[in-house]
Length: 261
Image 1 (tube, rainbow, N blue to C red):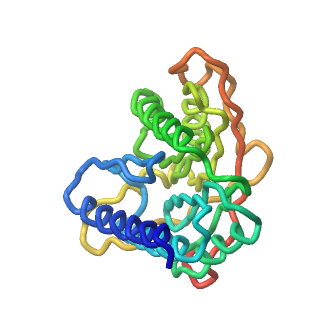
Image 2: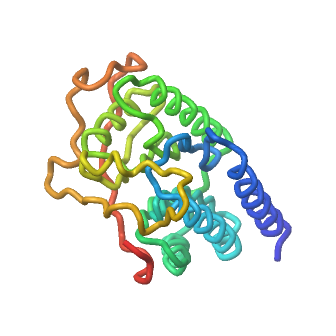
């Protein structure tokens, strides 16, 4: 094992320990990668799903770090058993290998492989992504029309990926807010959509017996209008005076067939 690989493995181990310990004592916590996060004060995932998401992230980071070449830069974001892969890999083989590793992890329901086949991003690019993510947080928290706690995000090369259990309207509004943040080149929606009448029952509480199976199944709307964003100025006031970045949807592939839907 090379010195770089050893450092990478140790880094993942430290991340896993820090993530697990920090979750035990915080009421409001910003989670995610170096350039991502989610606000956890009110989380629509069940407590069981939140625990499984942490386990998936720890296992996937460790296995990918050991299996891929040192030239790969892979970030992993998990929400409600859905896994998003972002970053850069040297070739298509490495991209598919990363996806295969995640697919073999128990409880993974679906995967969005957004890895780019290109040289790893620079330190300055990653620093910029972290700064953009902080502005995304400020924009979502500052919006009066949506609850920032329903979203999880990560930024890669100026592209912001949004996850969460939201209604179609909440998804559109959140994407619209983020698209107006300075520095955002594109917004990609990876939401699980729920019916408005079901959304109120999706707030996790410390009640005994809460489990991953207690949440109603997410509705997956179909049709070309599902991913559309309301016209500029309809839903929210822009945080920054700039044209909104383009918004798109990303394909979600089924994950581990043994995982619950």
